[in-house]
Amino acid sequence: MSRTLGPVRPARHTVAALGALVLLAPLAACTSNESAPSTETDNARLTVDSSADACSLSASEAPSGNVVFSVTNTGDDVTEFYLLAEDGLRIVSEIENIGPGLTRDLVLVAKPGSYITACKPGMVGDGIRSEFTVTDSGTDVAPTGELADQIEAATTNYVAYVKDQSEQLLTGTEAFVAAYQSGDDETARELYASTRVHWERIEPVAESFGDLDPRMDLRQADLEEGQEWTGWHLLEKDLWQPTPEADGGAVYVPLTDAERTQYADQLLADTQELDDRVHTTEFAELIDAATIGNGAKSLLDEVATGKVTGEEEIWSHTDLWDFQANVDGAKVAYDGLRDVVLAQDADLAGELDAQFETIQGLLDAQRDGDGFRLYTDLSTTEVRELADAVNALGEPLSRLTAAVVL
Image (cartoon, rainbow, N blue to C red):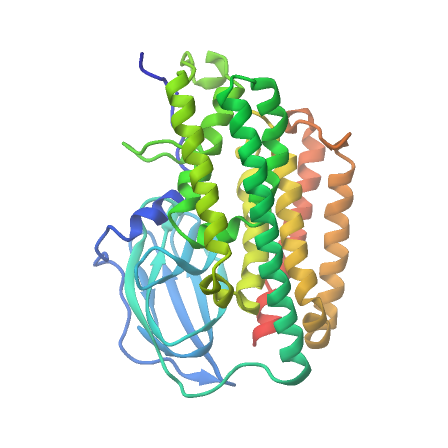
């Protein structure tokens, strides 16, 4: 018996394509000139023009150290910009949700090496890519003194936080899978949201590995033609089986016992792989102040593009659990860097403190026992208040990385 997945909506935000980037040749439409960028106060600044069919960089290389990509969207759809590792798979850094006519900066500390840049107009598809080189500037841009000590403490603590959340995710997934595979759907439903919070708090880390995030967290709306659906949201739909009216008129066919075992086993194996990866020395070496700052903003982007719209947990409607987890992760990242921000830009620190307090107050108002109300129970006014709070926090959070790096 075939299993009906129901209609696939146009993808709003897909990270699944990142896993496929390594398989695709660079597209000719991505252009750049060959001259190196000028530097200003030891910061390499490049412009990126992202249109419907091109990703034009002002230079194809930059010196190592602080690098700023100023990305302008000259197309008609929302776009994203990525700096990928040489293999085209691992995300070094990214900036999402750049609306038409807007410019946003991606700030990072780049090490010498070969990379790939990618624009994703419409935030779908395979991306428009080209090669990018970071040359050895010979200049040590690492912070010194008290600032260096603060950043070292922040990175050490953040790595420990990621490891802890990954360990809790693995433990929770083991219990969830055991219940699901045994047919204890009631227990599996009870464990679903409370387990996923550990994933949502560190989702940018999983996205950085490229291949794991689409296998584990792909939404049905983001499926591409011929792509197999796996991960949390496949099991979510099977646990909260929709009516035809809620599924585009399609009659949902439950997973067979064999399919339950197959997909639950894969989810657990992928979770174990994530845990293994974050416990390596190589992972710890990838974390710096820019990574933490950009990760905090990425978590707010996750809220804006999925949780506020109610599209992330479309079957279970447990979006507020995810919303809180994304805010948790962003707050932990910011708190680790707060001393640095306070020293560099006290006004920004004050604004972030206030906006985090506001958004947390709105979330606390939606609590129900140990969890939250279903997202479908919120009024239009309550949803709008949450959306406004996300926007209000997102703006100053977008300046966090620059405050601690430049």
